[in-house]
Length: 635
Image (tube, rainbow, N blue to C red; front, side, top):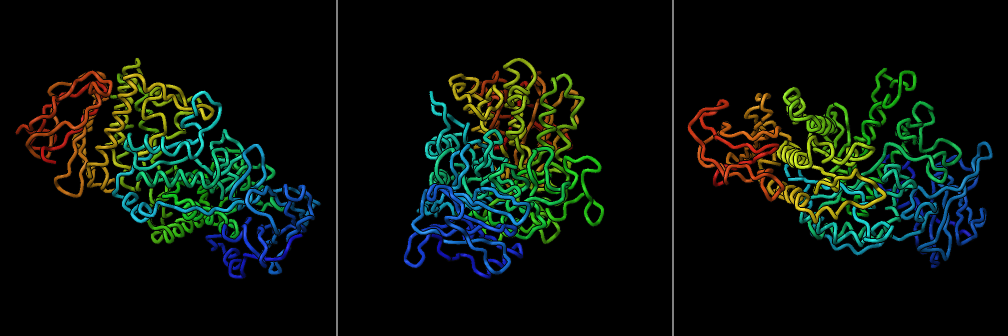
């Protein structure tokens, strides 16, 4: 029999209805507890249009009415109750009978902390107790997340990063911990970003069709197993960013859709409710309770799972009312525009809440348009994100590299245009999972030419990326030049690392990461125009560009020269800001990276020959399809 009881206070209800509750997960959902000396579980669910709500589960034969919940008498729409002698591991759902149209449905818990392994659909009562050991990381992580820090992100889909040899199953959270951390450290990445770990019914959605906004997927283990993975990465000095999807949710009947016989979480307006591109439902961000739900989810992952950042998916789809909709399929805002004012308000509120509670974390926007002020402070009218994915750079760069080198001289704008806006936001340069699926080919497969030229082009792309202003992100498999397009059903092609060319690509990425982290000129002024200076971008006939990266100290200078053709250039003169010896610290054509060994024998002495508006210059040897990086002696 269900005892009365509550974890929800009147103040909770007030904050919830105002859209200002940021920790609803402490109140709603299933919470093992003791009431009147009896061990059991408190249940609370928001279903304002329900006539009856019961907790059903394996403990009562899934029979409605055995454990009914009571509606609070405050018009909050919250139903609650206490089930004695029920605890960890119990399977449950809510049976909801609506006040409308005799609608009756069994729903999973929107605040469930754990779920059955899909395709099973029950929520699981679970205690999130964990003795964290990452205090040192948490205390100092601000240093790793500041705008002037080197941030190099390795993007990972947990289920397909590595599969146990000879087994048809995913690696568990705990199995991944040591091996993933070892790889990240060896390759020099500072952060890992996980495609959504939040529970999702369709594995092929990679987590982007999120259903459990407060539960890591049970496919790879328990919540504590995921905590162990995060903790282990922290203990090894690696930051953890989680993809998070507040834009839309799947239509599965046991989830959030039509929750209490009404459009509760989704929009009631047909033109706002359904997302035509992803065939999912769009959150009603005008509803205060929905905003409380989503902001609480963001806070939850940062607080309970010690995440160091959130990458917010599909921000563009939230900001534009006409996103993926034709004329006549959307309704303008009150001012007649296509901007989604409710989404703007929500994103600002979410970012302000996160930064007020966790000033040392990153919130990153996947925003693919020229929306102004994505990373500007909310106080000045911006959206308040810390970083924004530079989708324009990614698409332009990949379009350029897909060209046969013969034709690259006709499209230098694909390389140079990004600098025009590089400092308008704080950017991440992504080479993400979206570019290596759906018959787009792996990164190396996008490159023209034979196998040698493909790999040379790939190394050149990475060299250009790591020396261009902006933080870095590379999807798994790209670091060793995987040939096959990514498939979430299979593991990466780790066997390729037995071959020297793929070892060379991994060594190149490793050395790029090390130089990027070591040299302030390559990271500390990413969002400042003074951190970048063209030497020459006018040699379109030879498809050669050269530029300087500068740190805050006058001594922190890096020279980068890229040759985008397979023709070596000898005695190629490049102007430099001062004389002396310039050491060649990286060369993508070095033999150890799989190149031909064309280079500058360790460095070049500057000559008093004017070039590119500078009094000194270097007579360089430029390797084919190569990038060379120089530091002045003593730097």
